[in-house]
Image (cartoon, rainbow, N blue to C red; front, side, top):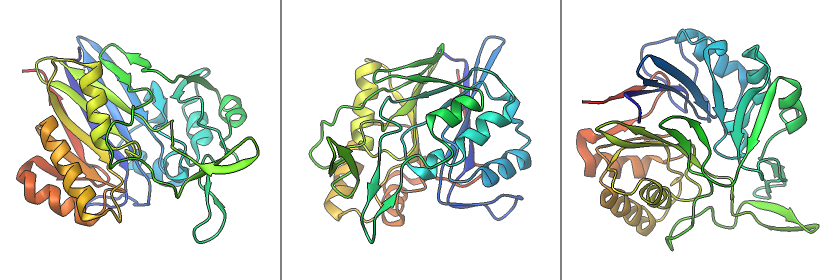
Length: 290
């Protein structure tokens, strides 16, 4: 278990009134985990463009070489953009990059026209490895440090969540719906507080992800949830069912933004009150053992 966890938002769709930050449609978090006298720092995702990530890290006083590992929550360009450049900026050899084995598959949509929205040219596996990255591709939960792990593949248990049919991939030479099997998050277990779930876009469904946390950490309470919930354009029924599922998991706080959607953020604020925290660049959340 960890003694403390700090989550700092490096890339997000919005910025606060004060601070020399840049916003873009993307997401990146810095996790600083402490256990005893050991400190571990890792990123979940890198946002959409290396220029924005680099600018915001510099503005926040975060040096790339201080980062110990990177987790890619899924293949989308707004979470993996410029990842090879970030890996190179750490100046490290064999810099750990954890992700799902399907990360580099063809991934696209055709609305309004054919476009690639997965890992982009220049960020392929070969480019990451040439930049000094060491890939750890796993379908199951993957350990990052004591008290920190990915969720692995998230079982799809609810009947109202999932990426839908707008995302496509190639299978045996044919275009088919892409279920985004690579969508995952990070679970952090803090002593005396419970589990913090850090998500990228929650394409597998935030309720499914919370159920996964309960499966992996039976008996542990959910301390908090942070990330994008991908409910932009969701129906009223889906938003209400998602809200009910979140409340059933009983996190003490929810910090959401990016792809969550304004209507869902309003519902979270109305239902959770001060326990809801909207995300923006520079948002810092600290969880400490009592």
